[in-house]
Image (tube, rainbow, N blue to C red; front, side, top):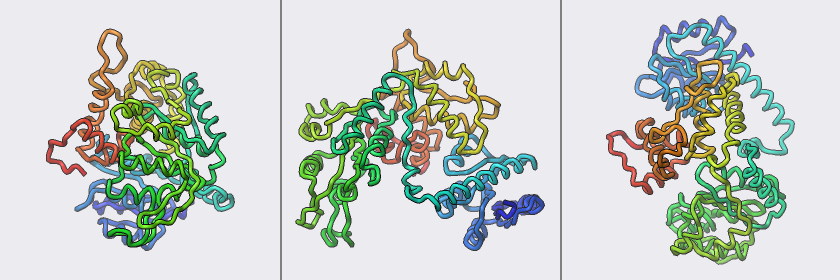
Length: 462
């Protein structure tokens, strides 16, 4: 692997020359660039394996380059270097795909350790690629989207798994999954789909509230070319794309009423017509839907159709919140610790017992997603030989533990506080804040509207 090609992109000429000499002496083929334009020119000509990238470059943020490089050249590994690093920058770099982060000035040993991690990672990736070429029955893209593991030992979560496996045995029944945000509803949908006879066909996830009203029918039913302005070609809708597969309708409670009746008819008849066409198309799909709302209450308020609820609710699976099954926290914590350590090529450090006791007494308003995010942060930032309570941040209205002597904050209040903290920590960048919370930007915007959270600072809320 000494034939690896390394690009050093840094505006400090002396630094790039010294680092290039080190890489060359180590046996790497090395290229240097002092501006982003020079860097992109090298990337276009050479099959670079490793990019050493400075965070601060003239006229551009190195993290923007990192994001673009990972998009255009996903096989390139990136080591971020900076003389002005902070914890938020480290976390953002890791989330964007950086393999390591080194603060200037760093020792030769530091860069050597980073190189060794990169070599091992690239060797592993090369072996995986060779195996994929030999065994291409299941696409890599499909495998990456499957998380079939349901971690937990509590009676509640074992019951959930039992219901999911029963649902998998009956591939034509519709399933409604309920539970608070972050409990893992989409994961259950994956387990059902990929354990059923529909597993060789598409599982397509649709956020029921993220589609604009003007495109609702087109997205679900497809359209014919010329049926409306902008319809420049025939397009299949969700129901047609999911023929023989599964359509997962997330946040089903947010589906507009005018669409609910049309979805109901499609479910009952298993036939649809594209917008601008009268020809009926038969399609065989299963519906798995999910919500964190009480649909019965929405039915009473005339915000959700009762007949649609009956169609969706053939089998109901409810996932209890994490605070009601604290015995699942330790196995989840161990799993996330090992998983994130492998992803960033760090040794899997043991977890101190105090951490487990502390987390088992925490409310977890964000449920499993919150535990996952805080574990990722702890793994990235930990400097010791084990994960301690100092590596975990529990800040929700100043409450770190459950208390029988104090009044618990409502989930809505906790969620508002989490959103405000995330926006503040990410300098009011909505994309970054959504990533920190483990939700989509569309979901964040909806929650901000729901709780009347407004950005009052002058930062650009992109």
